[in-house]
Image (cartoon, rainbow, N blue to C red; front, side, top):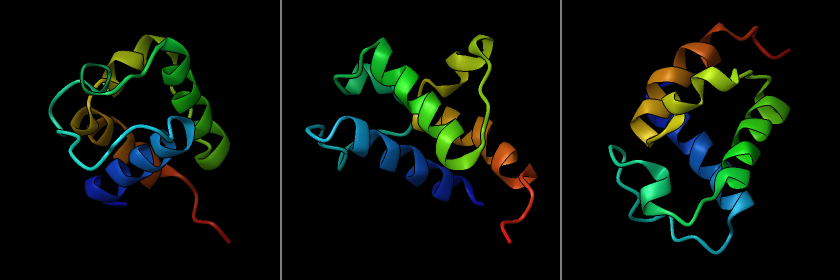
Length: 87
């Protein structure tokens, strides 16, 4: 998975948990919570959806690594690429 594909996965999850948000102008280098109306519960939903949909575990101590789309891609891309191939 590329970093751009990883960013799209995160945007898809945000679109599902916050359907009223306009994601067309999200800046990849700005904290998501500074751009969108996401609260701490929304953020936890993102983490839970990563686990449920993609089997990606994010320890609570590493939540700050998911602050922006760029940091999400930097953190999650190696995790996605380490997953066993789907059969």
